[in-house]
Image (tube, rainbow, N blue to C red; front, side, top):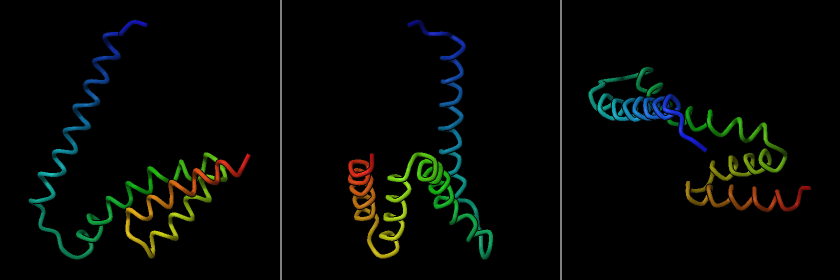
Length: 100
């Protein structure tokens, strides 16, 4: 296996851009003075990103993952985050073992 210089450069540039956008978000969020609807939209960004990461896995992988997502979603309405994560992980493991 050899390392292609173009691939390595592309990976490095993508890493720098990703890191730059994250750092810029941290610095810019403190300087923004938002109120009302723009503030509500800005506050909803983390949840929207989380859903955009979870939804494809939950809906495209199989019934065990989809069912575990529903279980974790229901538990998230009543329980703390750490407990919800544990419930989600345990439920997906048990459902994968139970479903062929």
